Image (cartoon, rainbow, N blue to C red; front, side, top):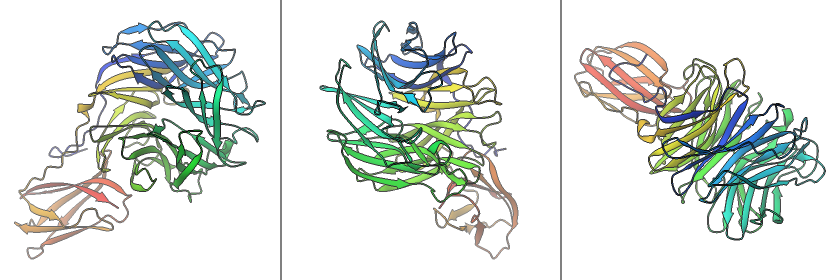
Length: 486
């Protein structure tokens, strides 16, 4: 339990409004906002045949449903919607289509086009990089005057799950491919995940490289790449993560964004057996890493959505660590500043398993899209959710120092020991508490100090790297300070 004189901004998100689909197998990823402030959202939900079909939604900024037409049925099988791109006239939905029992064998990527005013279906485009078989999907959409750029997963050869990063440009009428290109290596899994960033002449994309393991989806490295905008020819790449871990090594960059100058990437990384955490990293446009931080508890965290706004980085994902969630997985929304300092987090929590999968910031509002199960005993998604929140509720950790004890932290960040210097009024007895960034107390001890001592040494060598709160309490007063462990 946190002490009254120190607070960490956590707890559940407060919503301006929320929309939940009826309890019947449904899942959601992509969300976007058009120039008029209307919200476009896509859901994959089961029909009477238990196939997944794509349904588009349009809301005004107050949460009123403007339209929700009948599902788009491309063919018998499962259609999934991973990305939404909104204009004032057209709603594009990108994903994939898998025939019954066709997962990993015969799944073309899919682009669906709806009228943004009425929601009425206009057209669709399906494509397989290998015309015979394979798993393909669309993970981002960019619109240009001369065509539509699609990125995602591409299977060109090999058996199921041996895939590559895929890029293509198609005509606006979705009738033909202008060019297509892939990036990867034989007999492993490479794939592009989440949003890409494009500047004047370069595509920046993230994902995974060298996946093997089960279904070739493990034991790889997080990947950040850059390609030429004309034809997606390769320019450069960098690998990162804890790729030496032996236990089902989970390393994947699942989402990225940019403030125009720097690239911000998120995903998950394995830090110990049975322990994957969210990473948040910053790179320059030459792919040099400027900083990276892990976030999470002792079980499993992952993140796939990231946005930057007004000097802050927002990350959406999930956690089932007991220091965060008491019911399976909870959705989490993290806040950092662009220098890499952790600010706070909030939860999206239901009795089931929850995950935030995409987000869109519009002014001071953030729209969060994701999926929930009805019970924390299964990961099967049953309900898709869309919520609107005010960004101001993600307030900072209270770092105020109560100067009744005149003490200072000699060096911060720290490595093995935190050294504190008492400038006057040295207390003889101290209660020392340390909290991790989820608010869990990770150290509590009583210390006695002689009158002639002026320094205190606290061993933090066993702590994982990250942000902590150090709390001192005594009869002479209290002291609270953020502590950064390298």
